Length: 449
Image (cartoon, rainbow, N blue to C red; front, side, top):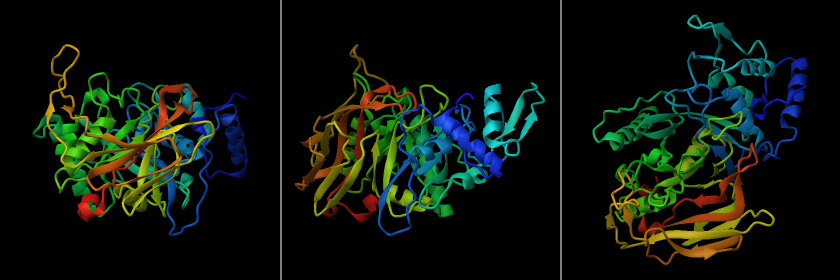
């Protein structure tokens, strides 16, 4: 029997003989694949925080550009050691009645084989005679995968508004105003404000994340500075055109982060900006935009939507593409970091920050031809985002001197950043990013809300 795709492994509530086939298919599906992180271990409900691994940006067959069913995707992440997963398809929530053409005969055969005839509902498209499948809603398949203190699914969606904004834990679909004053900047601001308004009216924990700011060079640091209610952005996005590292002339997302922080925090009422890492996965049968490339590790006692989102809002998490930590904390003015090292791998931990009174003067960014690059982040002093301390030890610490606007941790390892599906290098090294920290006596509580 031919081995199945690892993305199509599935748990279901079938009769005993179907369970036997599911177990056989699981064995075949994962034979010969690179070792996974393993199924997440269930944890008892306690008051002791622990790290939870999750992906906040995921596309499925519900969207126009995802190529797998959400059930299959949920199983992949659960089997690879994740504890939570947010579905964020373009302009749609995984609810209501939705029919799609099967992409091909193989997809139809595999879906029926893994989920059974009773689960798969089909009809004939009256326009072209193709077979369509009804896409199961999140509420329908959630019970197959969720387990208390083990695995959680979160509703969300990606809202296209010139730039793209990911909204988490919604129960209603938000429509962007593409004609908002201010062009792309105005449209993004409109979406962020709508998410905040929805949160206020519903009482649900939810917030917006600016997705892949350097995708098509759509968003500049100056846009983020001026959208003062924007609290999250993707410092790493797994899409191959995410341009996380910038180019010879345009700023990296890392550099943009420091510019935003320095500009905002020079104003005593400025809000911190947090950075997440996310897959932005679209391709689950091979392709350039697959799962498992970037994620967040959230420190929380509970694995519930409210607890996870609250911890994110408090900045109690780190973003990573492979570097794992045992500890990251701040107390009594000292930041402490403990890496969970891989054998034979070296690490550089950098404490990055900007000091008070920094010169915020800036000039247009020029290209190789000496001309201004449209919509590019402007050029600022290198004192913004300076490396204040560097360590090559697995355990390190940094004590505030008192003149820092903020300090954040950036870790780079010598290990290649590898696609977990193809086992091929993605061309960079594994990294991790801690969230910006400030001395409490210099900030009001509202600045870390």
